[in-house]
Length: 555
View 1 (cartoon, rainbow, N blue to C red):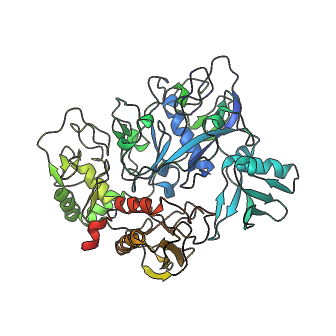
View 2 (tube, rainbow, N blue to C red):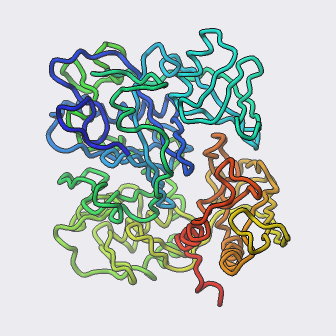
């Protein structure tokens, strides 16, 4: 997470984004956005996605709005740039990536690199996973490897970048200096990252002293992953309040958008953003109307990305099939209010509750009108009833609802896990950190198949890489409790889903569904093993976030 700098201490503003500094010369650079995975590693978004993020930040200036009118506030839906990223939104003020269907939050950052670096040339270095897919190194590693490669070096040590690996350019392998385990690596050409400007030192990978590295140094410890609404974030991460109705943020947190709204005509066809202040935007040179490219002050432009969606609205598709069933679910858990609070927002559409739902042009219903307001029966959070209907229609449509604010689950939540088999056995061998007991071994079997109507691309095939998957729990009281709850989660199809692998980038494949498992028994080289004293408590919290608690065991 980027920290704020004193106004005179560097080139980064309160959100970690560059700002103009009077009297400083601007330099051409490329911007790379990265997200932090659960192991503390930074993973770069592709160049096309970074171009879209930069373009979204430029949009207010290109539309002739006055920069610097207030604190930077914008929420950028990544599905507009890459359909496989449809559940994800980047919240710029807090520098967090928010997954809308699970509530998972991860840190993001923006680094600037020289135009002649690997990032500017579109060169990516990748390592091969256990499943055979390829994952990119964080960009500072890619830049370092490319520099060494072009200098003709045969081998480099990544310890200066915080990694315990040696890289051989001759054999194209990565070697763990402790275990000797090797992985293949490759050098691949991709689209260059978007051009922007910098007012200070650029990122240079090793022993870098640029302000970005001073703010975002190292991978550090794994950050706590908040699975609830942004109201529950520490006060130091508070999101600035904004007054505009067209933002995707509210004073209480990040607005929950049921994936991307379908493409609409006119102004509603583009992402709705608040104008970030001057420090959040690369400054454009000229004035004028909207441009067809992302203009940088060095005169180089990045083409606009299309933001249209070819598929018809999932909301209207779902409601056209079973309108009464969807409405019955909403009315079962939402009680209609006779009057709407005057100054309260609906955090789904971010319109005033006293105004019609922002989904009235994307979701049609005969009995639930755009102006109707309702309150969830248990947690008492208030929304437009049509927004709740749109959220339900874009989900699994399993008869359950989950409050987008506090994550309270109504009904029994089920998932989209493909058919398979779960096997359980016990081993006499102990796990590291659990010498007083044996081991529970879980084996998951799932085969490749065809996606059903609940999956992202019905009718298309999906792959199942790395199966059978072996997982391990300590055979003690808490471990057996976790096992019982995992059995419930398996029956409810919550452990796996069909989506895009965060490890390999492959889409239409079986992936873990936010319930973490330990897949290493003897070591913890990958972070998926033992010892881990907090694992059992963490996985119990993850199961509870999916509605799987001790109360389920007596049913």
